[in-house]
Image (cartoon, rainbow, N blue to C red; front, side, top):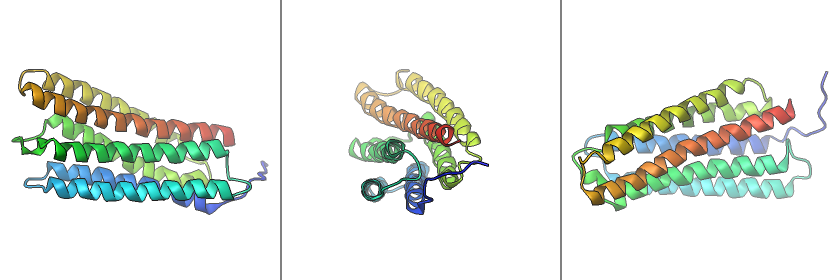
Length: 208
């Protein structure tokens, strides 16, 4: 039987779960962009609010690290996981803000591939939120990081097809530049979810 001298400090797991649930809120807001007559400024503003909540959660996590003598697992891994969850939210917020500030939603419709990328992010956020509570026991996590990596591959394919669409001549040059920046943020968010999953895998291996 394996014994652990590390404490079961529930606050860390609660903070990770809260951060991941905020990512679900973020991707659900981005999904609203596919709705007819959507108020893009409202979506952007609410994404900013969710991002501020995420910043507070990250701040609380860092304070908890600094005030806890013995942490449930490696301090550097706790810091890294918290930081990477916050990075995802930063990219999601950037997508909403850029779409609004660049006026891209005034187009007849956003490219289908852009919505496909957002759908991938939505799936990644949900499996991440489902996985965070399992850090308490470090059980049944492998399927999580495998699925996030699979989804990241789907995101890469959607991103490449989006680039093909952007450079097909369908849009004017200025619109292409604007949408390329949004596409890059979407792709970066997909990658950031994968970084979270890779860190969870590293933690699980260390603690097994």
